[in-house]
Length: 130
Image (cartoon, rainbow, N blue to C red; front, side):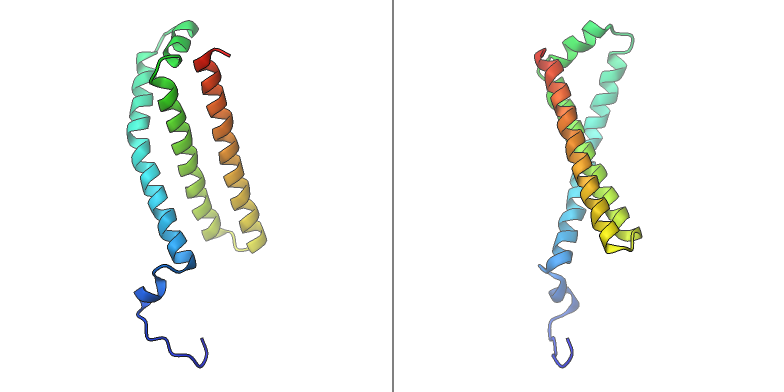
């Protein structure tokens, strides 16, 4: 900003501008997915403990219940979204080539989305018996 005087404070300059705004949303998304994962992971671990020694048919019957598919899909989506958010931060912090940085970020986002789609389809196929 050569030759121009900016009378706004540092906070005023950051609020609502580009990467600062995006960074805040990214930070909140990471926290929200982490909070969502706590009960989902506890539910999943408790479910696995309850299914210990169960037959294939019993596990399939459990997955066809009204709660398990919804919770499994929520776990998949929240976990993979949290993963890609965290990986994006690592890539942005430690990869210095802009081309490599954006290639990796896009690859991580597409990979997480593809894994969520495949996992969701798998859960639904078992849940609906197709």
